[in-house]
Length: 105
Image 1: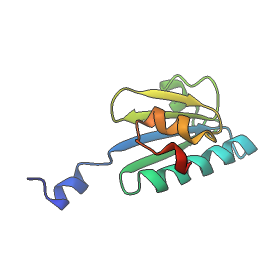
Image 2: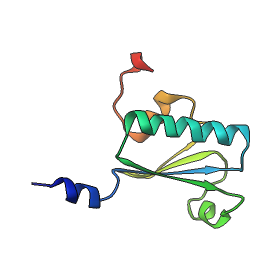
Image 3: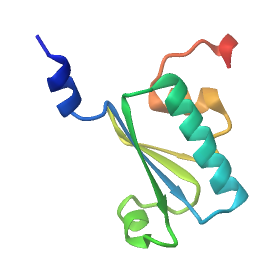
């Protein structure tokens, strides 16, 4: 039986990296959209790292980022990439593997 303490030390269920290019409108929108989605559907179960590829190009190179904004889902399951401002919630949730009711979007 897993205790509450061991669940907390196990780390987040979802690990996401969002690659952006400075404070452009698309980057700002992507940060806002993924933050809203995570807080609504993954609250307390995610880790979100926002990386500005101008400031940390080596991280973008490691994840083979060729466009921004790009969301990389590291955990759970297979690594998945999603390019764009993340405004299509149903698409983002599908990539993340999060069950949702389309009528509530």
